[in-house]
Image (cartoon, rainbow, N blue to C red; front, side):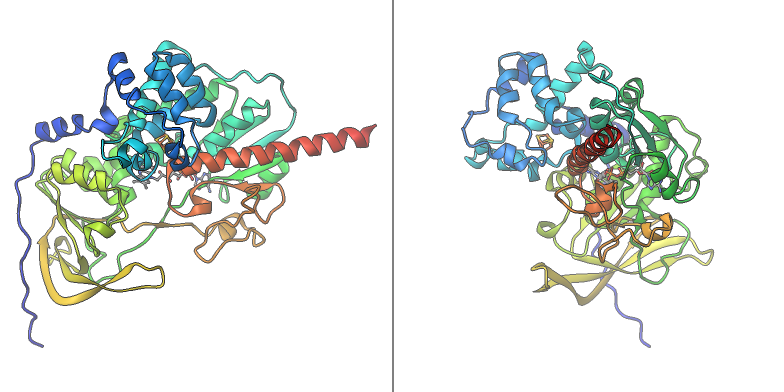
Length: 481
Ligand SMILES: Cc1cc2nc3c(=O)[nH]c(=O)nc-3n(C[C@H](O)[C@H](O)[C@H](O)COP(=O)(O)OP(=O)(O)OC[C@H]3O[C@@H](n4cnc5c(N)ncnc54)[C@H](O)[C@@H]3O)c2cc1C
Ligand code: SF4
């Protein structure tokens, strides 16, 4: 068969050196805005107190944004922090990594009137960072201790928020996690240039000092069964996140140098902690000096391209099968990546990974796509144009999204009901699963989502768990009388 003619449309661009990349990261105003008291106050004072708090409606936690902006504008930072932390267990984390352009800031009245949003996330970060510096954030001292206990599977934001809420009410709380430290994707997924690791560590330390027990390196379903947990605790929360990476289905995807996104990011994050990571140290998971191709268009893909730049990659290209407007990732992240030198190949879908005789990746062959008819979801489906092109690569990162693991099988609990995508089904009024007394929160319920939604779910589940335990305690008292 005659070999198809390839069009080499890919443009090689100069990558910023490490110093430039760092300078640009330092300019990443939304996250790194290091406000002075005056600057934070001035930004907070831009809030018109419009009386129609759209921003609050745009926040999954319904944070009382206008009130803490007003208090910050009046330099009443401790009160602002109290209002902010009443509805959010980790405001300084959300302030750093929420996609505010799609949430509170995107809907801000000032933004809608064309004057540029009040930078709500940066002020939220500033208020709670100040609270930590000033020593206002202290361990929880519940008003009374209760004898009942909760077992929480997963120390990501969903599990941590639930653990904190239950401890506040005086329950004994144990958090089990398969990893060796707490935080879930806050520590091993999201890169340190977006969320500094010490910011998560101090949260975990505070929860430990509040009397919450953490059992790390404990994978429920393997080392300990779910039924053991249910017998040990009065209530159990499943907050295990989603970790089954969607795979690349094209020839050559098994070539040496092709890695799943989370493997790549976890290695980089572990290096940030100073851990020994042989696969990074031997160069395999280090992008330095390499031509890197990242496949995918979500926030995980953006984290991969921006991490590769910081590692000193020679060239970083992102392939996404739809166009820019239809990209699932935050537009702000795309803009940052572009400013840092990432080349985006929109409307490009991998056709094959090309490798050397030794089986090492050397290029990605991509189909040029166009947007066709809308599918059932209303989104235009990408279709092939018949054109293709190659992008040279020494490393390929697959960032195609995540599915839930098969939890009924892992936990040996067929009665645990999941939906057709494998996410745990809950009664949304209570977050209770099909197993009585077992609740679920975060990505394992929603599919891959956001930190702020995991926090909301964790808080909602904790409230329902508290109500159920209180009702059980009351009926025990009545029975004993
Ligand atoms: C690369 C990347 C970047 C992201 N960036 C952002 C961002 O900028 N902003 C944002 O809002 N969201 C972001 N997200 C999404 C966000 O991280 C998740 O929505 C959020 O962490 C979900 O919280 P969770 O508590 O449900 O699960 P996770 O954070 O995934 O935590 C689950 C925990 O459960 C543990 N676990 C799993 N199975 C078991 C088991 N059987 N036994 C014991 N422990 C178990 C895991 O070890 C993990 O610690 C990103 C996600 C990724 C992958
Ligand atoms: S939690 Fe997120 S959405 Fe809510 S106010 Fe903070 S940054 Fe905005």
